Length: 416
Image 1: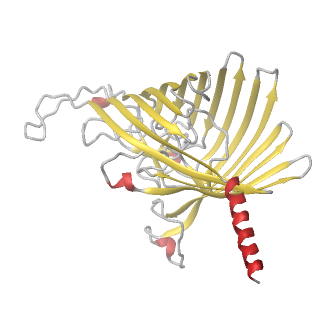
Image 2: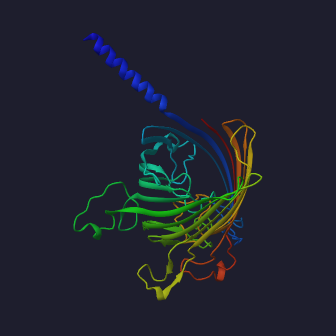
Image 3: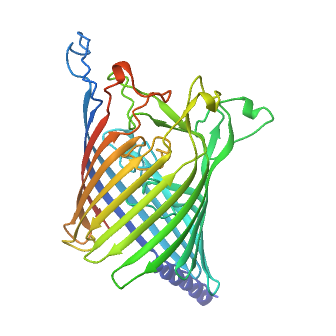
C-alpha cells in the first residue's frame, strides 16, 4: 500500500513538473518621460493680480512634463487543443495605457490584464480558434493605433478562422454595464420594471460585435501584403469626445472653446492594409468611417434639422524601416493621421492622439541588448474641426483659435 501511495505521489509531481515545463513566462518593465506643449493660439493674458496669477501673463500656452513606469507579468501554456494565458500589469487611470505616475496610490495598483483560454480545431480546409475571457484585441489595425490602442484589453469571446490565404476575425466583447445617463458601470447589473426610469441605475451590458475578413497575398519572397475589411457594432453610448483636439482648458484659459460631442453606438467601417517590402521597409494604411453623428442645438432631443454633422472619418498612412529583434537592431517610422471628432471612441484608441486632431507621428527604437530597448516618439498635432460645441464655426473672440499639441516621449524598457 505504501508503495502505491509513493508511486501515486511521484506520478503527481512528475505530471506537475511536466506541465510546469510547458508553461512560458514573460514580462516587461518600462519607464517613460513625457513632454507636452499645448497652445490654443488665442494669446490670452491673465487678468488675475493675486497669488493665483499675475496680470498680463500668457495663459494660452501650457507645458506639461510627466514621468511614469509600467510593468507586466504573464504566463501561457497549453496541452492538446487547449491553450491558456494569464497576466497582471500596472493600471493607470485610463484603459488605453498601463503607464502609471509614481509617488501616488496608483503606482501600487496591480490589475488583471489577461485571463483567457483558447480552443483550436482543424476542420481540414479550415483552422478555427476560439478565445474566451480577458484578452488582447483580435482585430488587425495600424501601428498608429487610430482605431484600437495596443494597451486595451477586452472581456468576452473572439474567433479566428483561417482558410488558406483568407481569414475571418470576429468578436463578441462585453464592455461592462452602463446606466441610462451613459456612465460606464461594473460587470453586473440588476433590473426591475422601473430600472430604466432611474438614470443612475445600470440596466444593460455594453458590447462590441466585430467582423473582419482578411486576405494575405505573397507577391514575391520579399513582398507580402495583408488586406482587411472590418465592421464594428458598438452598443455603447457612454463616450463623449472632446472638441479641440482632446483638450478641455477652460480652467486655464476661459477664452478657449471647450465642449464635447457624444458618440452614440458607433457603427464603423474599416479598411486596412499592411505591406512588407524589400530593404526592410514596411507600409500601412487604415481608413475608418463611423455612422453620421451630429452636434445638436437645444440638447440631445433636438431634431436633425437643427443639427450639424460632425466629422466621422479617420485615416492613417505609415512607413517603417527596420525591425528590432536582437541587440543593436534599430527601426524608425513615420505616420500621418487625421482623426475626425466622431470617427472613433477616444477611450479605446491612442491615448495621445485624441479625436479632432490631425498631424505627424515620428518614432525611433534601438536595442541596447537582446531584451533591452530605448525609444523616442514625437507627435505634432493640430485641431481639425475648428467648430464650437454647437457645430458652428469659430467666431468673434474664438475666431483665431487653432489648438496645437506638440508631444514627445523617451522610453526605456526590458522584456523577458
